[in-house]
Image 1 (cartoon, rainbow, N blue to C red):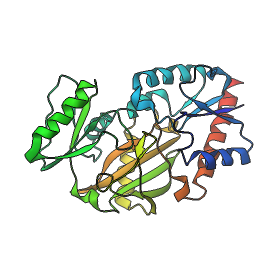
Image 2 (image 1 turned 90 degrees about the horizontal axis):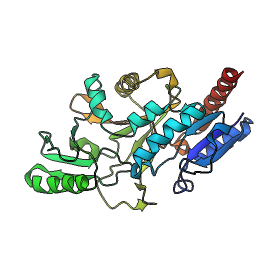
Image 3 (image 1 turned 90 degrees about the vertical axis):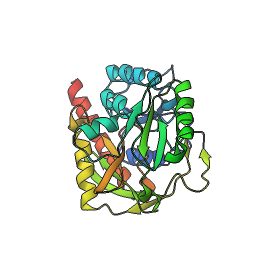
Image 4 (image 1 turned 180 degrees about the horizontal axis):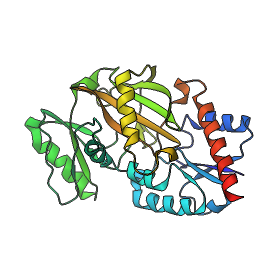
Length: 294
């Protein structure tokens, strides 16, 4: 029985979660192989479990990635499931969460050829609906809507759907954004992420902007909103292997900024032994996969 840990060539040296996870799997005697999702020479049917981790270049080729998810899932159990990965790979899921009653940053969506219904806010955030690492994200003032419209037009010209959100001033607080990490829907730890749109941040590998991450304690209100977000995920909740819920303060409490079910950093360096929790979960899923094949 063997596990494919799925990454991308451009991400292998940048994913700080992979070394501790590999060590934890090795310590448990779980056979595993690091493979790139778009490597044409990989025979996915030779694996008994496929675990998606740092496929950080999918944003440039999402259609290809979604098609790969379907193929991989036909070869072996895929975690997270293909339906979840496809849904989570496009930030239009924020509209679904809001419709399900989950406190969420208000989000307007405009596909190429559509006009943006701008949120009623003094400051706006514009970004592609398929993006990662704060790339192609910009803040615009309502008084200079022409710049925001030009940003949308540039992204539309690239064939990309765009979302617009009110800029929440609270996010400028270094303690504002809290990320809650879950394995098998069980909370493991939380971190804080510093503001991403202030100051000069280096671009890392063309994949994301440099981040400032520190350990944190999640509040009861943050736990409630995170639980509501996970409950709204399509498919069977028990199928989720891992999740990260990113929250920021809203007017009436924490709101979901992002729900990361595809390739999130799980911030193992900020929580000793969290990688052991994931390794145990993978070992258990592998055992179940073996039982299902006998």
